[in-house]
Image (cartoon, rainbow, N blue to C red):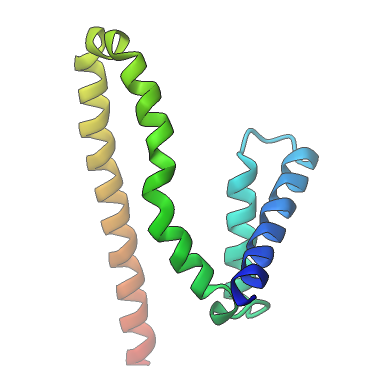
Length: 120
């Protein structure tokens, strides 16, 4: 029963994201709105991490299954991928490098800010 309640909380934030997506004219996916709302609820203490922790852990374990359908779709279009292999490879390499750089820079900024707060 605990998992059902936690899943309902997550589904509620997903529904709120869908509502915001319908109301706000920006090209942002509804899932992003829902995740931002869930993050804000956790950050502001409206929702405690313990209230969704078990279901979130379960969903993360199942996450790899969600990639099976897109991979089958890629396998169906292997000729298109092969003809565009170089641009795809470049995008993957530079996109990964950019993600690493931004993520690393963000972590460094957060760690430095934490050290400054602790030093005060």
